[in-house]
Length: 112
Image (cartoon, rainbow, N blue to C red):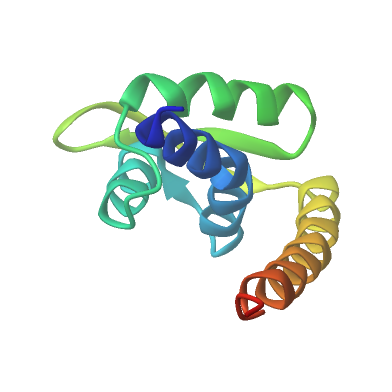
């Protein structure tokens, strides 16, 4: 079994949740999301972010608006929709349950 593959899959499993949390703070530009995700070592491949943002938009969880930029082309800024806020609330509950369950399992000592 490949350790790196397992680690990548674990990160992928929480990527959507982390992206929705970043967007929930207010309007955010994709490169700022990418920087935060990379700094947190959740994601390091830019090609993963844009398809996920498109999927979230098509699902009605996020929306975007174009904003003119003084230093180049217009930028797309993302925000959560009402549906996205509700979805994130459900994911928050699931995350808390998963953390609790994982701690319960990983805190047990090896039997002698």
